[in-house]
Image (cartoon, rainbow, N blue to C red; front, side, top):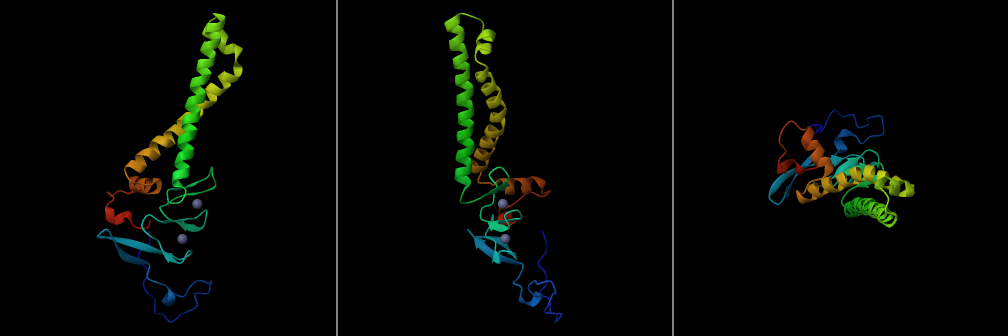
Length: 182
Ligand SMILES: [Zn+2]
Ligand SMILES: [Zn+2]
């Protein structure tokens, strides 16, 4: 968070490092009205635009992302306005798949137990692949299930991961006027 830079009038047009001279720079922030609330939007020097509310510049992708949620290292790009629903469907369907595989591995083991009339441990030893899948799904479901629940909560409360985490880090309570570019 930087305060707006003053419109410098020192007569030195060339900053010497290829940047836009101070006099030619646009004001750092601009007040816009969103649903009757004043929101401060910041200017992005890299993308050369005023960031709309909830837009943020991703340093990894090096561009501004509208309704920025987070930069996902697993899919290698930002999660924002245009791919959030696909991201959520991916995470949610992966959770369902984990639960499905976990559940039906147990069904298979119980079927073996019933067919052979042996103990559950013997049935488990009969199908090591099911045991591997049960352990694998049990570990994975905490990650994808946790993400599904967390993003369901964010969607129901109209928040983004980025805004939520900056709200948690901020010592002051966040207000609607702070929904501007961050
Ligand atoms: Zn930008
Ligand atoms: Zn990114």
